[in-house]
Length: 226
Image (cartoon, rainbow, N blue to C red; front, top):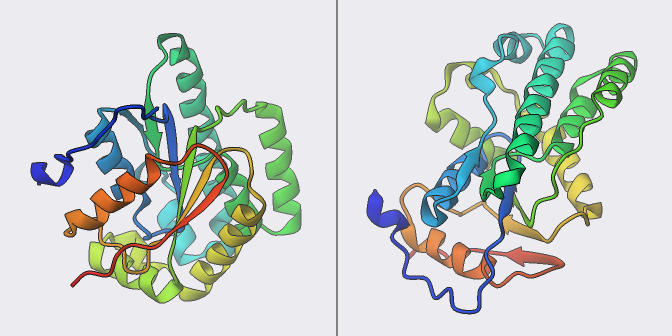
């Protein structure tokens, strides 16, 4: 597996992004990509910790009655992670994360009813979260059937309860969000056939592409596997 990250990169005249955020719906491969990038560039990782959320499995079983505590737990967790990140900024670290703070509100809009979302928004505003701006955002997208297959393949017990309707709503919310996103350079990646587990060429080609991004919005499709 170490060879997977042993890339022969020409970094002459290349300014590496110091903070990369990888985003996308459940099962699309964002954490896998974030870990690969962290190892390739020797970056620190800032990762979501869904296994720490005691409400998550209950949410997958009964979304209506468990959405609010699930979302508030994630909100406090991410806010604390970003607070810790701010405190470390004096050392000018380089990092890759598998989430954007703005994504928390995206999930809240999908999962909460109007009254719950109003309460969530009050809490969010009270936290006065000052989220650092990434130097590059990578948005991985794939259709619902692909996400379901990947969720099934990785075999996390709680995730086997996820329904296609929920993933459809998430995918729609992500597409709307990134249609208007302009806070940082954005790379939109078609991850339908992107194999970051066993196809090292896919990973190398993606890294070569993202190293040339300076600003604006970009779209990437991997070379089909022969």
